[in-house]
Each structure stands twice: as C-alpha cells, then as structure tokens.
Image (cartoon, rainbow, N blue to C red; front, side, top):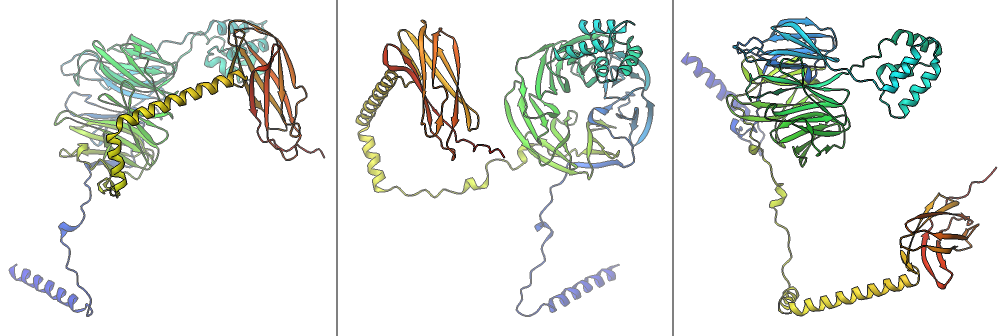
Length: 611
C-alpha cells in the first residue's frame, strides 16, 4: 500500500512538471487556487425529504392539512382535490383514501373535546355542507343556514306557479326587481337567462317547488381555539360564505356560536386569540379590502388594497397580504402600513412557518408562478428554492415527527416534501441590509470662500436688524395685497362681490371641443337678501367667436340658490384661434358691474366639411 501511494505521488509530480514545461517563454504561470479561495454558495436551509412526481393530486393550500390523527406522535398529511377525493399519507405511503360526495373547497383538523389521548376531527368543507370525519370514518355533516328569500321574489314565484298566470309578466317583474336592487336567488337568475317562452314555462314547472330555500357556498375556513392556547386544546371552526357571512361553529360542529355580517365575500381568513377570552379575525374580501372582526364586531378600520388579494398571513401583530400586482404589503393589525416586498412574478400561494418546540422562530414562505419558493423574515429574503414546476398549494407544519416540514403540491399533480434544517439561521439581522454602499462615499463639498465667511459673520452680528427689516417688508406686502384685493372687488372682477347686502358668486365652465362651444355659468347669491332685475352680459373678440345671445336677464336671485345659464359660443375662425370670453353681472344702480368672470376658451377643432 505504501509503494502504491509513492507511485501515485511520483506520477502527480511528473504531470505537473510536464505542464510547466509546455508554458511558452515570457508568459506568467498562475499558482493553483486554494479551495478556500472559491466563492461559497449560499447554503439552502431546506433538505429534500421526498418527491413523488406521479402523486396525481393537484391541491390548493386550503386542500392540505397536517394533523396527528391517531395520537401516536406521527403527523399525517391529509389532501383533498377537485376530483372529489380525500387521501391520507403516513410518511411516503398512502394509508387511507375515500370518495367525497361533492367537490371540496377546504379541509381542517380540530379537536372537538378533551380526550386522552387527544384525537382530532377532520372537517371537509364542500358546497354548503361541512363533512365531519372521525377515526377516518364519515361521522356526520353540518349544513349552513339557508338564505332568506326576498318577499317580493317569493310573491312573484307564487303567482307564476299558478296555472292561469302570465309568465312573461312575471319575467318582467323579476327583471325590474333585480334592477331595483333586490338580491335574487340563483333560481331566479337562471330563469332570467331563459329567453324562449316555452323554455320558461318548462323551467317554472320543474323548479316551482324549490324556491322555499336558497343555499350558500363556503369560500374559506379556519380553526379558532376556544379557551386554551395549546396544540391539542378544544377548537372551533370559522367559516366564510358567499352570502358575506362569517360563521363560528361550536366545538362539536353542530350549532352556531356566532355569526358576523361583512361588506363583501370573504376569500382568506386568519384568526388570533381565544373565543372565550378575546379573538380577532382578519378577513380579506373580494372587494379588495381587509376587515377585522373583534369579538363578533366588525371594526371600523379597513385596509384598502390597490389590487385583489391572493394570500393572507398573520405574523404576530403584522398582516402580510399578497396582491395580484406582484407585491406583498405588510400592515400593522391596526391598519398602518409597514413596508412592501416587490416580487419578479405573480404570487401563487403564501403560508407561515412557525417553530415552537426545538426553538421559537417564524418566517414567511411565498411560492411564485416561476417555480420559486422564497423564505422571508420580515422584509429580508433568507433563502430561495427552485422547484422547476408551478406550485399550486403549500402547507407548513409537523409531518411525521419533523416540525419544520414544508409540503408542496404542484399543478402537474406532483408532491414534494422538504424539511427545514435544525441549525438553519432564520434571523433577518444576519442578512446584509441597510444603506447602499454609495452612502459611504463622501460628497465633493466645495470649500468655504471668503465671501461666504463674511456673509455668515454679518448675519450673526446683524440678526435683529435683518429680522425687523424682513417683518416690515412682509407687512408692506400684506397691505399691498389687501389693497389690490379691495380694488378688485370694487371693480367687480373678484370671485365674489357684495352689493346691497347680497354676496354674489359666479363660476363658468366650457363644454365642447369646437367649433360649437357651450359655457355653463353658475350664479349663486351667498348673502342674506335677494337681488332683483340682474342683467348678464357676455363679450368677446368678434373676429374669433360669435355669441348668438350675448345678453340674459335674471328677474331675481334668491339667497343660497344656484342659477344655471347656458351661453352658446361658435368659433368662426378657420385657423381655430383662441381668446377669452368675459361675463358681467351688471347693476341698474351703478356703472360698475357686480361681478365678472373671464373664461379662457380652448383651441377649437376644425369644422367638418360636407361633401
């Protein structure tokens, strides 16, 4: 073995000698770089645990759930999809799969009672129902309260249900009710989409018995702890629906504990607190606003977004909202904006990474449409993971016995699991953040000249005299301005004129693009006494404009009443010249007008030629 090592070392020295001999004369020979001199790549905090490219389930974030369903410390992955399936993974194997009666919209795990050992309950939201699974078996279902039908709509359907009724008249009445703001049911909306009379008759005959109730649909769900902040504490379901309601079910998911009416349809929900103590529900709605519900009451502070929200994450006292304009906005829960994170492409989904057992750490995970999964701590980017596929759903929590697990579901149906390293540094302060390096470059400030030094010393010595001179000139300027304003009011050219206890305001607006214009004049008596027999005159350059009726007559100006006058003006210049039109409110007792207005006319469009 020693001879073999000696032979390899000799061969290595021989190769190095030959390579040195091949270097031409006069050229420089660089020494081989050490391994420590190479730039180190930023190590990803995620470890690849499992990847199944043929899982065959494409799930959104609300379709994924991690829970200890058997109370053995081994957390399972529960998935539902649009193909009406529910599947449970134990590690990398499928442990259980069941067919659902309807297309699901969310799945949650909650504890309905204090047990030993504590076994959670699965709740699958589907349509207007919540399907309850206990011990991996269907147990029961909860139906949301039906929507009340408007009495006007019910009366119209009762009349159309009779044999001797006029269906066309009922159709028109339903259409009129919708235009008047009546919230119609889905049955009536589908009926208004039918145009032929025979099809309308057949539709009424088939559906006249089903108008007594209108069901809603579930849009989002969340879990709220009832009275203890423990992982296995009794919790309650929070449900958002299409009829702008937030329902909170009791721990057994049999009765309503509270309900809240919102201004718009909720799409994302985030909860904080305890139901029996104090709780807050942050709701992102389809109108682009974020509402906060505190102890069953909607607070007045509303966060208005520029675009529609695509994700909502509650991070301590901050609310992170991902929007359709590729921006993540961070708000304080009271509504103050903290900062924004601008992304290179649209956001696919967002979630919160929270570790509490081995250490306390929180971070924001954002999946983008280009396949990137980014990890943020505040506004600092910690790490980026490339997945080479479009992420449709993301779930973070405990999978198996690893607390920092990330489950990714892709649009192609693949499934990926990554685990956070236990030694990963999620502290945002370790990231190089702060002012740019250009700030350390000193500015090229010119040196102080002799004139600057003399001026500074003079201002320091004569500060009192300079201040007095400035105040005197300021008083003179104010006096000159007041005198000019009084003269302007006296000649009737001001914005408001006073005559005989009456204060008159005039405002003019030009309408049209030419050559035919219309000047809309608003005259208001803002005083306490009325004016009688007030003539109105309009003058302009006769070479440019023609006013068919330059004089008007107002018999009376009642206080606090706005009078409208329309003055037609025609541009007679072929080149479309521009000038001003002066409008005067004259007085029968003085040659000075009450008030006047100068209207600057725009450039006129050329006249259309008739062929």
